[in-house]
Length: 274
Image 1 (cartoon, helix red, strand yellow):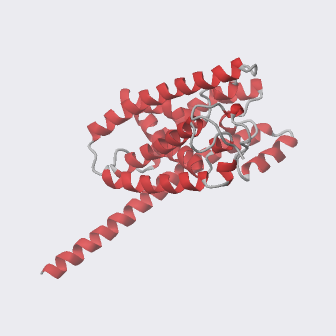
Image 2 (cartoon, helix red, strand yellow; image 1 turned 90 degrees about the vertical axis):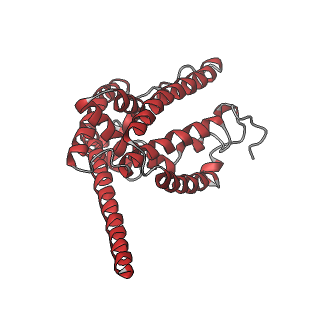
Image 3 (cartoon, rainbow, N blue to C red; image 1 turned 120 degrees about the vertical axis):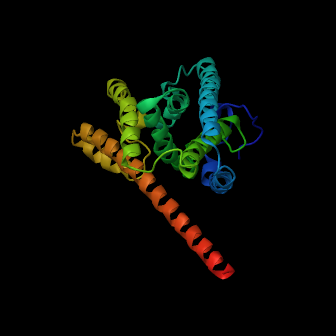
């Protein structure tokens, strides 16, 4: 058993921990709590005004950047002082790091850039956020009640919440235009990441090995073994697009169904009052 660790202890200093909270109570607890709070927050903020949402996007973008800097400095201090050297995998090139740039641009830019960034916060935020709500990889390295785990929990919860908020308040239109602009934004971020992955053998955004992605990793591995790594990369790009489209059209279907139910209830009440 792992015991006697501090809240800010680094993963390599927590003796005896090897992901017990991921396989035990931690992951389902975080998942259930997050889904419950998403519903509660959606109900509370469903009528939020656009000017307040804009303020939220601006503040969240700044907070994301500040949290990222704090966490990077914290991890790097331990990595370097313990002789492991700088960990290149904490650089802001993974999918969930895009939320920093997207939030800032959605909050402070205008025109198509704003539309693209806002669209990404819906589709990319929900895809990246939900995948970690269900499979919080940080718990493989940190116990539930630690800074390392809490950082990841908050980061991915608010990624998801932001996407939900923009949908329920009609801040974005649930149409193909939103998918298109969001995907262009995602692709623009992806191009330099793919170059870095191929130059240094990294696997940011799963473009090099699709490491850790259920089912996809096996397909990518077969392609790579047949000297078709570029096809695996193209496959990941197509998967991102498919996931983005799924988020938009599923959300549209849910909203339309809810509105239909509410409309029928209102008609029933009006009929009974006559």
